[in-house]
Length: 350
Image (cartoon, rainbow, N blue to C red; front, side, top):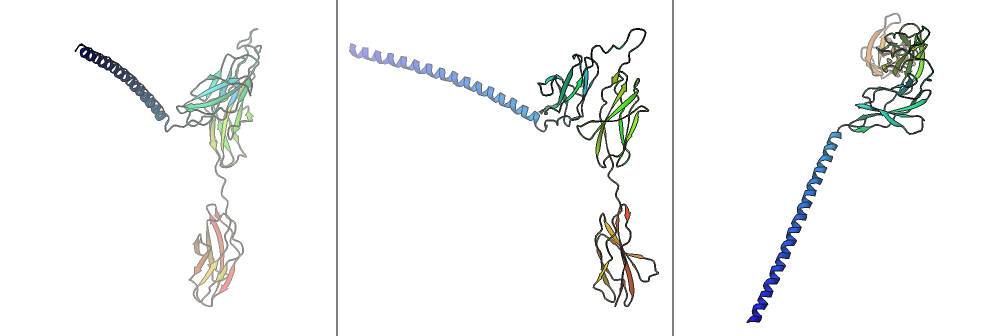
């Protein structure tokens, strides 16, 4: 009996210890699962954030690369740079280097198409590139433009000895470009105080070529331009102290080339399918023609009458009578006018 009691006590002890062990395992697993659930929630949140960023960028594309970059030294320690507006840009980033092929460092992030870089070293050439920026990202960098700062010994704004040293004129404002014809554009701007002349920069893309200068008045008319072409213009003011920075660019497109009258239809009309009451007249096409006029008369001394006007080069004339001689000729027509008449065709009906 004692042995049986001892055996039962051992069994109960084993069950109690094993049960506690199982309970501990269940609790540990629950904590781990709960932790994993928390991580899943965090990941879900991150996924939501990423989705939000994607939504912000949706519908917006990276802006185009700025064109027309130019650089102008303002003093021994400053250079002004300007460029054309880039499509889709909300701001720009200006990069600078002391070598055209060296490493470029960002020095500014203006929201306009101009930037003045200050604190530079005298008598030093600096190179600049510009990129456009918006919520979708940053464009590629433009081609570089360079300028060299003036020497530090070049004088100051006010000189000694009772005299005054001239300063560079300010940037011209109010620049306008007006189309005059298919080959000319007039450019005008506000006069700049202290300027003795102006320089006009003209281009058809990102390439800017110095053009004519004028010492009288604040306007200039370009001639000999290509038809149907957009030209861009910038103006600088000049005096003995130097040249101002370039103005904001303006543009204008020349008119289309004027249309000329069409060529005269070649040869004379041909007659086919004649009868006593009708015949068919056919003629060739003419360059630049949009329509034709067919003329007829029944006597060599009679006036010509238009019997057909249209785009076709064939006409069945049912207004004839038998045993009668008719004369035909044709002209070509477009918006510029009517060509000279073709050679005449004489025909006698049956």
